[in-house]
Image (cartoon, rainbow, N blue to C red; front, side, top):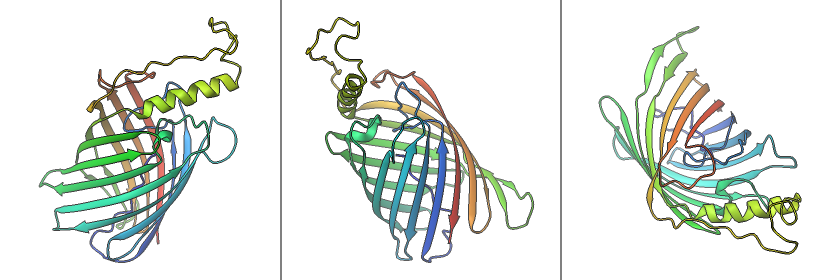
Length: 268
């Protein structure tokens, strides 16, 4: 699921609690999405200790899917600044999905992430490695280059308007897609779209799915443009992401996808 960013307070080492609320027009799983758009709202809380250890809890609701919460998650992580320019972050997240979830990531309920970041004179580079596992077993590697650009103040001397354009390239495996397709067939059969639905499948027959063999390949190019307004304790952001899938990406959606999100963070 989408990961939330803290209201930035790198200069002061203190214990903080950050609350976040996010709306997005579609779910992005490493730049990939389903054929059906799945807008959602998300709530998250992150407690970060002065030593670098942090804990998070979140939940989100798919707006087009009825019923209760669509996913909940708990996480623990540790961030360490080796220098003013170089830092590392390692985390583990456990997610809980309802049965027959329509999400691509539902097959992998566990995620271990390691991110290394270095700030150059003109931009910031990050290398992120993920091991996602559960019913399937996937690995992802992402490289991101971003530039934080201050646009100045608007109403007060303490506020700030900024943009941070970023380019991200993601490679990985796609074993999760097998479970996603199997669950999709179950949902369709439950809606009467399986046997005797005019597709030639007789009563009691089993639908066969064919998933291309997957290996570690280039998956997506993501271009992000977030516009943020911040003060000392809160940040509001509107962000646009344009994702282009490689020829190796297995998908039923379009090769080009646009994601728009609205976010609000408040830090105590």
